Amino acid sequence: MAKKRDLPRICIALGLPDLDQLLEQARREAEAGETFLEFRLDYLENPTRGAEAIAGFLREFPECTILATCRRHQNHGRFNGGTDDQFHILELAIRSGAHAVDVEIETAEVAAAKMAALRAQAQVIISYHNYENTPRLDPVIDRLTAVPADAYKLVTTARKLSDTGRVLAAGKASGRTAMIVLAMGELGFPSRVLSPAFGGIFTYAAPILAEGTAAGQVCARQLRHLYRIDKLTKAAKVYGVIADPVRHSISPAVHNRAFQSRRIDAVYLPFLVPPPQLRDFFAFANSTPVTGFSVTIPHKQKIMRYLDVIDPLARRIGAVNTVWKKAGKWRGTNTDAAGVVKPLEKLMRLAKASVLIVGNGGAARGAACALADAGANVSLTGRNPDRVRALARFCSGEAIPREQLNGRKFDALVHATPMGMFPHSNECFFDGDIPAEVVFDMVYNPLETVLIQRSKEQGKTVIPGIQMFIEQAVKQFETWTGETAPRSVMEKAALEALDQKAFDPKALETKS
Ligand code: NAP
Picture 1 (cartoon, rainbow, N blue to C red):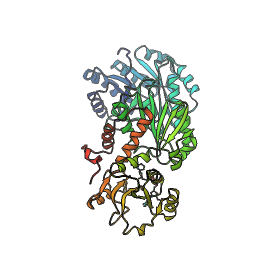
Picture 2 (picture 1 turned 60 degrees about the vertical axis):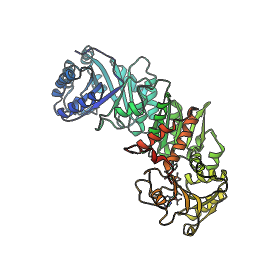
Picture 3 (picture 1 turned 90 degrees about the vertical axis):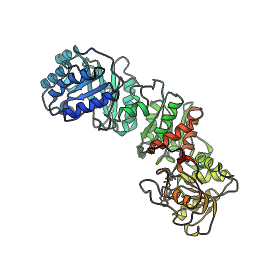
Picture 4 (picture 1 turned 30 degrees about the horizontal axis):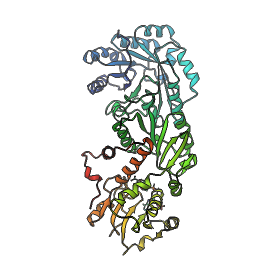
């Protein structure tokens, strides 16, 4: 029988139908340095053989802690036998060296004597799973803790971020009761990162290069290296980006690396916020230590109605991309504007410079305000003449119909539409001559858009969109932390996140 021991912070859940595959995956994890593995015996065609195999695995990797689970299919598992068979397999797993077993509440509450016998031999976790939603949690916790165990696992499905907030709060309020708390699904993702810092005894991760056993699981490498869950303390500040979709965002890669570089006890998470759930996001943000967040599509305008203080530039632009909490008040600003002005200022005096902006959406509006404030003569063009005219009136600029651009020349051009952005990477607003000497493309995925390529071919000086991204992220970091941002670290992280296999610092430079 294995001795009871403290459980590590990350448990790799291994659910595979074939024992050889399970052992191969377990070895791969152990060789990568993971020390806590869950053997989902119920996933195996022959769970008994799986339980027996634990002994051999532990002879090879004695530093590993094994959690054995054989959940019945009635209770969201895959084991087809009765409870007697289930306990028989779990006991066999313990005799083979498993340090802990997970028994679902539906089985545990009808088998008190068998549970007590298991507890005498190993750590027993009693688990509750809800694949539909997150119900009221107090009755669930009362039900779980009515059966004696070493730890209790509460796993629900998040339908909105405030569900995730409630699950995390349950972990925080658990006091001396050892709990594992998680919300499944993309909306529950923050719980996978935050639960150990918020009182949960461990979190689950998916194996390397394989599917996890629950929606929203990511691999341990990401939890450790990107989100640094081993380093976060109870006092960690929480930041993030709200968007829908949010998966594609490179902001978590950039800001987490910046926090790491400055040794700040903080984490930056992707928060999926569907448009009807913006109010709910604030219920979550007010119940967790969310201290600031980035705002992107589709929330930049609507967010304004939920903020207490908005700075004059953001109010004039009509869009906020950066929010933080100060003295209990949510404040908003717009760092996209600085992201346009700063790279251009390095190349020219903006006062009296002629600048053509392509587009009339939020980013174009921010650029128009910031450039007009800097004294530039702003012209606008786009595919929708009415909207272009409206924006031109707003910033006292000139609206130029697309077909009348021939023969016109500008000092700089700022492209602010999604044309050329992945997956429409072959699109470009200009077929022939590009009417400016300096060409700034806001699109940064791909790093080198067709517009940037054509501009270079025509001998122009180019500013790739990643420069704007870095500039606005630097300003966000400094607004939130009051510290100087580690710019080069953030640039490198952005390029890596954009899957630039070979890091090429030249990709960030202005090219002429
Ligand atoms: P938005 O509010 O949705 O506006 C998009 C604009 O593009 C609108 O003017 C729209 O015209 C126009 N447009 C869309 N598809 C077009 C097409 N096929 N042909 C011509 N015009 C088209 O978006 P946004 O927030 O302004 O963002 C615009 C671009 O800037 C995006 O690619 C975004 O990723 C990028 N951006 C980059 C950064 C950065 O840090 N580098 C920051 C912010 C934004 P209609 O009005 O006719 O629909």
